[in-house]
Length: 431
Ligand code: PLP
View 1 (cartoon, rainbow, N blue to C red):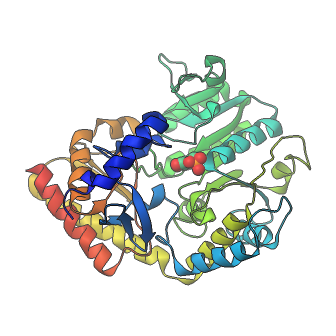
View 2 (view 1 turned 135 degrees about the vertical axis):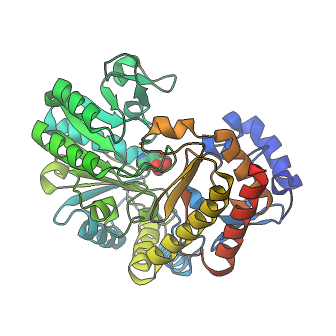
View 3 (view 1 turned 180 degrees about the vertical axis):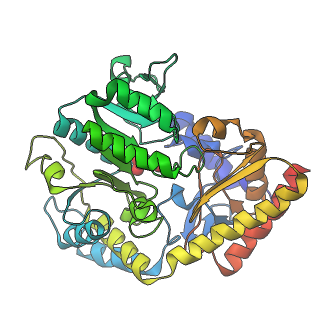
């Protein structure tokens, strides 16, 4: 398992990709695997197999969707069965009805849902819905939360006391960014100030109920309570972005796990079983504003794609019937314990944030309850850990501002390898 990243075939593909794709990839984080990404030939269970013949234990799981691991037999069977009948109709099919009923039963009983093709589309639609419903323009988001790649959410906290956001991407107009307010995560006082200043102008508050995009950061109970209370009092809709936490923290996602309720629930990743997906769910009152019933526009050639619906349905059935949550939680716990054991002996300050099967390690900091603290952790050391683990055949996210995910196949040999490699790699990089 030595020198995975230097496989000759991967290197050749990378050389060609550099000519073809900006930054050599089709999504930025993939280029963070240095000196170049390993190219994947196939995946099975807990393992990725590279074009250079290496086998890698995968603790990234495609950045969240593959909680059942790669090529789970019942998902494969459902896809094959659906494929054999055709794959795109421009008309509704049975699977979308079945999947919608199942999802709504867990996340919004009596509500409605719209399937789209990515988390990005879903948060964009949720924000448009909140604006359409309230007739207001402002959106409130939190520092460190990621909600996809559209203009309204590519915004960070501006300077000074004002909460108005500034663009984090070239090409996002300042006029658009100013419609998004940004506040620190887990900070109730700041939240109260924003609502005091802008409450009657806020259409929607969008939040990751557990941050998965500044490493992993769990919410404080009082923060969640304040979010619910303040949005309700001000008439803003609470948009829970459960693209990562949906069906990962349990069948009811963060709502069930933390006993909270969102007005709009945004889903993605797991509900598509590994195929492109996003979804917006809410009460009938809110959702009936979407076209063609109402006047808030959404449409999509690929919305409720038959293969995605089949894969999603098979995935949710597996989540209901197989011990996915227990196995993935225990796997993450084993990794957490192994890392703690090594780090405790060094006397270095560190934080491991874990919520069920999502976790991240921050070296050099005592606490990480917001994105500013996450950014203070020793990124270089983490990157070294990622590189050392990859060299030994285990893939963790290449940045500690991403999450480590476990799933159903992380048991037996795959888990033993992952734990051993984590332990030994940590010892190596900590010297
Ligand atoms: N929301 C959250 C919390 C996410 O983590 C992501 C992607 O990682 C998105 C939205 C965007 O989803 P997608 O990449 O499917 O557009």
